[in-house]
Length: 126
Image 1 (spheres, helix red, strand yellow):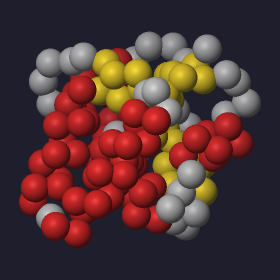
Image 2 (image 1 turned 90 degrees about the horizontal axis):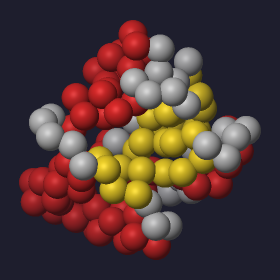
Image 3 (image 1 turned 180 degrees about the horizontal axis):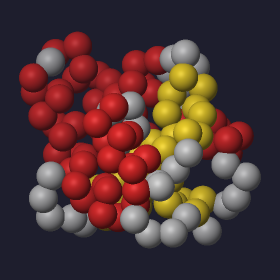
């Protein structure tokens, strides 16, 4: 079973643009999958909400979605992007992100990246 790691940037963007991540993942992935976030992603969401009033509601919605969908939480020590790259090194792991720097690092390692295109749908970029 494949695993999809979701980054903070993708969560906030998906809520902002009203992209249904779960139905889109089912559409683009042709294999069974589970969804997970790194614990640090939740901490980053709190930082985003504290810095920007306009993101407060988006962060709250994103957190509610994570709970409602029963998303797995993965522990990791260090910078969130480093933890994601380390965890994504494993076979059959996809990463959903809007972060250009993280995308470059993942592509260099051969990890499939999923991104939001045209503020409407997901695509897999390998």
